[in-house]
Length: 99
Image 1 (cartoon, rainbow, N blue to C red):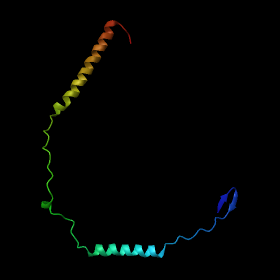
Image 2 (cartoon, rainbow, N blue to C red):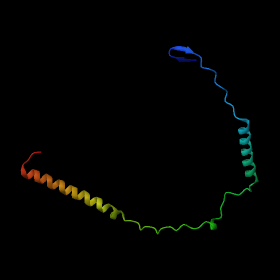
Image 3 (cartoon, one colour):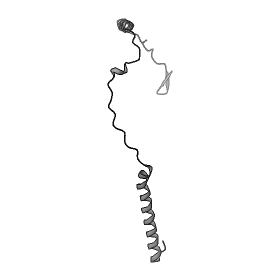
Image 4 (cartoon, rainbow, N blue to C red):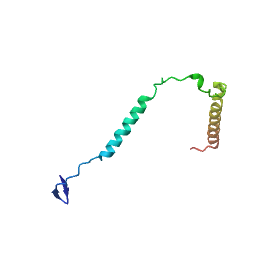
């Protein structure tokens, strides 16, 4: 039941969905043809001949980076920041300014 403008009314009967018999026949012909083609193909195993696949050139490996070499810029940055903080604190203490 549907309510239209506050009055209950029955919806009109909807037509039954039908498929044209010719369309249904063509669909069956297509599906049956595909099944027949797949059944006629020879079964091929899923493995491949590795020798037939061309080799992909690999780039040369990068040399390993030393841990100390990788951490040096970080450690240097921390030392510079610590030095700047100490210099700023000393400047403030020397001028007598109380922040």
